[in-house]
Length: 258
Image (cartoon, rainbow, N blue to C red; front, side):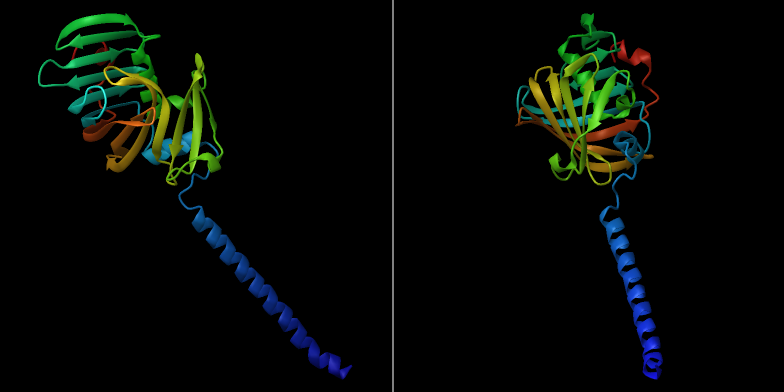
């Protein structure tokens, strides 16, 4: 009995040490797990996470860029792209001669050369409509309208680096056209893919890779975009001027020649 009493404190202290070690090990595991997941969106809504990481909703924006075009209109060009949610788009091809302008107000497509009107036709069914829809998806906010767009997240194991998450989106009135958007660990859009027809450049599956994200006000936006059409290099875009939430973009902007 005396021997048992002498050994009892030793046994209890050994159990205490084991418990303390177990707690320390659990703490290490939790810290390592949280570090490995740092930067990943914590909620289940990927779109909301991406919009929040960008700096919030972006109802309108304009940019002027230099283009290095490898197919179609080969050479060095510039364009101005102005977008206003949900389906207003102005694309101006800037040349040494008369600029070309394509305007969508969501209903009509208008084409101008210089300040002269060339054509006016319903937007629906035109090649330019695919560009409008591509732009709306790449600006993300349209994905929050379930009456127009359905989307679902893809298996992360099927997403290529540097992306870690992705989604597939379809417009309700054209479910055959599938678009894929992929996001990195910081929930930034780094890749987009889908069917697009670009006037003078071609038609097919367009893949855009976004890079060089910079702060412009409260927004984090890409200044470099690499485009491939059906797997072949199409053009490189370097943004020279970017104005998020551009107050100059009113409904009239998308009906009249710039």
